Image (cartoon, rainbow, N blue to C red; front, side):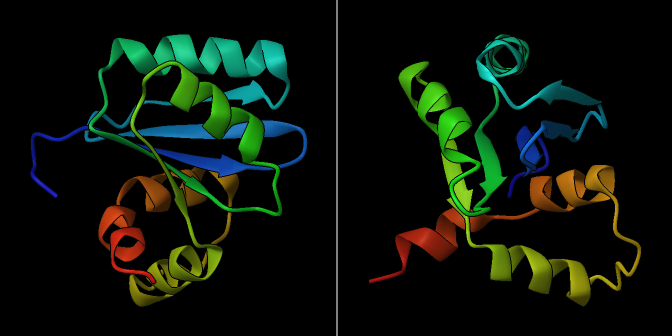
Length: 117
């Protein structure tokens, strides 16, 4: 990943999307419902991200991913195992939604998914 690229990492739960923007360090949360997703899409579009990375969480990520795709935003759904492994590799032992969002924002899942068969 280039240092000037903007990555957005999203930690997804049933009720909430926790969103981290890298490299700015901005963070915000929205409800994981159509209204919250609309707010997130509008706010993320303003930063013109190079990629939006969202962890696969048993289909809870799909409403956001579909909305981002329909809005023309560069969305990547990341394998949860890769997210967990990356966190572990960095020594990240604490677990909060905010930390998870920033870990996801640091990933380069595009290479992971482009190389899968």
